[in-house]
Amino acid sequence: MNVAAATGRLTLDAIGEIGRIANFAARGGTAWFLGPFYWRAFGGALARIGYASLPVVGLTAIFTGAALALNIYEGALFNVEAFLPQILGVSIVRELGPVLAALMVAGRCSSAMAAEIGTMRVTEQIDALSTLSVDPFKYLIAPRILATTLALPLLVLIADIIGVYGGYLVSVYALGFEPTHYVTNLVDFLSVDDVTSGLLKAAVFGFLISVMGCYYGYKSRGGAGGVGSATRTAVVAAAVSVLASNYLMTSLLVEV
Amino acid sequence: MTSTPVKVSIRKLEKAFGDNQVLRGVNLDVAKGQSLVVIGGSGTGKSVLIKCLLGLLKADEGVIEIDGVNIARQTGGDRRLMARQSGMLFQSSALFDSLNVWENVAFRLIYAEKKSRKHAREKAIDCLAQVGLAPEVGDLAPAELSGGMQKRVGLARAIASDPEILFFDEPTTGLDPIMADIINNLIVERVKALGATTISITHDMASARKIADEIAMLYQGHIIWRGKPDEVENSGNPMVDQFVHGRAEGPIQMQVRRDFVSKK
Ligand SMILES: Nc1ncnc2c1ncn2[C@@H]1O[C@H](COP(=O)(O)OP(=O)(O)OP(=O)(O)O)[C@@H](O)[C@H]1O
Ligand SMILES: [Mg+2]
Image: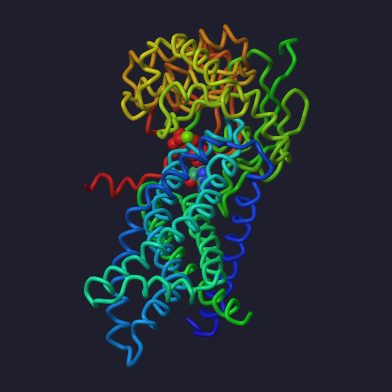
């Protein structure tokens, strides 16, 4: 086959897919606000996505913070006791907290969403919803999107705190820093903007992760194999969209 | 035919998937309170027909009238309004496995009609009793039930909000003959009690004879025969004859590679 033609077709396919995902996201994102509200479905999603992700996000944050402290210490040439908390704080709050938490949630939740919704699709449960006068977008999609979009900033906030604390532990107990110095250097240097930009990113990541999980689950076809490949695609799409949108948002946020 | 008003009327219904023209102009009327059974070989489009009627698939062409209102072009809210008066028993039961049995049965009451959970639960237990299941079953998960029990729960869910139209997609497939007969009896009994109009599809001729007021046969995208259950034996139609008597030889050629099958 002609290479140019193949590339063209791939590009068109990709644009078509992005269009379908955007359409799906718009439907899922707005469905909630039109009511009826399925609070029970929302609460369940919040518990599964937010609360149950705490341990894995916390572990990721504490180890990352600790390792980061060692790396910065190793690389610093002078005044490390002032620099370390500052660099560590900014790195975690602006970049690593949101991205790592989002990647963990992407692995945990977009796969679970795709598998749940995909199984419901291939076992006709989604058709059954419609025949029982319940809109699948309101009952299945919207609560998950809303829950993830709200939960991820909270998770990131917790990840920020735990990550910085991981750095603190290493600095104080392994590197022999003065505890109060660590805290004052960190607090003086970090701005509110640093924190809010990270949380804003997190909300976008949460939205993207849940859209990918729901979209690939919703359109899966053909039994267990279909659900399996939907799950795989969902995780990859969620992770890639987190990383790509992170670059995009960072470049916008750094400008202002 | 009869003087009772027509509940469901289908005209020139067409549905294709790509090159696969499944329905090629189906015409069918069902009178109010009647039970129609659609028979036909595997893959002739029986499920597609029912899904078009339910709005789960969008028909390419044609008219579907329910109480004289064309719903074939309706979408979204209007469509759900119409869905409100129908109930569906899926071939696979399609119970929600994240909810327990009584929540499944009461699903429409809780989530669409916004009834209190207490009221919905009472109604669900009542519906379970109607299909011969004890109240304790209500607290089990669907996965803990046998296939026959799942079918009964599916039936209870379909009838829970007293629908005017009921759809049954192969209600007895995969059940032992006794359980199949129990389900058949339940359908006949419940439908009589509700006064509902029903459209069922099945391969199972025993079931068809039992639950049908009329039988229609779908073949190559058309309804090729329609008649009373006692006429089906001597329909004079070679296709119906072959189907009813389950013969491999006849005008209907299944898509089977015989050479390949016999070599194995
Ligand atoms: N969603 C779909 N996408 C593409 N093709 C489909 C779809 N649903 C059904 N078909 C095709 O339509 C045809 C009819 O399918 P249908 O499920 O209605 O058969 P059926 O009469 O119910 O058969 P069975 O008795 O085996 O259940 C088949 O050729 C099938 O491949
Ligand atoms: Mg079928």
